[in-house]
Length: 331
Image 1 (cartoon, rainbow, N blue to C red):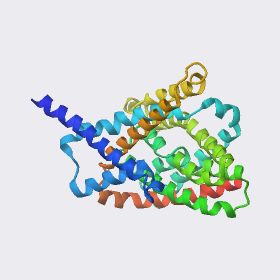
Image 2 (cartoon, rainbow, N blue to C red; image 1 turned 120 degrees about the vertical axis):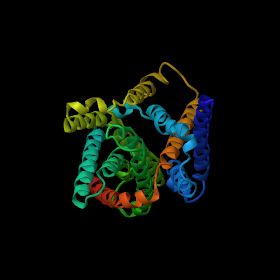
Image 3 (tube, helix red, strand yellow; image 1 turned 60 degrees about the vertical axis):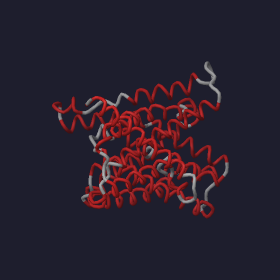
Image 4 (spheres, rainbow, N blue to C red; image 1 turned 180 degrees about the horizontal axis):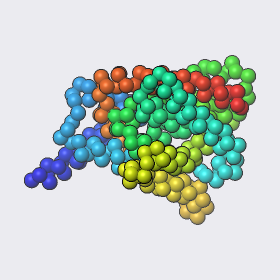
C-alpha cells in the first residue's frame, strides 16, 4: 500500500513539473515573456505556486527527481549543442578570451561578495553562470559547491533576469558603438549570460555577428568541464581530505563530453540523423531543463529569497557591468 502511494506521488510530482514546464514554454512565446525565456518563466510560475499554495510535499519525490535526475539528463543532452571541432579549428583565440572572461567573472564575484558580505554560495553560483553559460553552468557546479536547491534556483532566476536586461540593453546600444558587426558579435558572445541572451542580442546585427557571437559563447561552454574539475580540486583542498568523499563527482559531465564528441565527430560524418529528429532532441532538452527549473522554483521561499538574494543581485549587476566594459576594451 505504501509503495503504491509513493509511486503515485512520484509520478504525480514528475507530471506536475511537466505541466508547469509546458505552460512556461508556451507562455515564453508571448510578448515580454519571450525576453525572459522558458526556463526563467517556468521558475517564476513554480515560485508563484509555492507562495500561494505552499510546497506540495505529497508529491515531493517526483519533484526531487525532476530537480536532480532530469536536470542531469538535460545537461548531458545539452552537449549536442557544442561542436568541439569548430571551436578548436576556428575559435582558439576565443577560447583564450573566454578563459579570461570566466576567471574575471568568478574572481570579481568573490571579491565583491566579500566586500559587501553577500551570501557566498549564491554569489559564486551567479559568478559561474555569468562567466560560463548561465543556468546550465550553475546546475553543473551546484553539487560541487554543495549548494542547496533553493540557492541554485535563486541563482538561475538572477541570471535569467540579468541576462535579459543586458541583452535588451545591447540591442539598443549596438548601433551607437564604434564596432563592426563581427566585433559586436564577439562582445555579445563573450559577455552575455545565456546562449539565448547571446542570440537575442546578436541577431539584429546580422548573420555574421550572430555566427561569431554563438561561436564565442560556445567557447565558454567548452570550458565548463575544466572549470568543474578546477572547482573540485579547490573544494577538496579547502575542506581537507576528510571531506573528499562528500564532494560528489559530477559523472553527468562525462555524458556531456561524450555527447559533444558525438555531435562534433560522428553525427554527419558517420551517422546521419534527420534535422527534424535533432530539433526534437533539442526540444526535449529544453523541456527537461524547464521541468528541472520548475522543481527548483518550488523550493524558493519568498522571505528567505528577499533576505539572501538582494546582495548577490547587486554583486552580479556590478560584475556584469564591469564584464561588459572589460570585454568591450579587450576586443
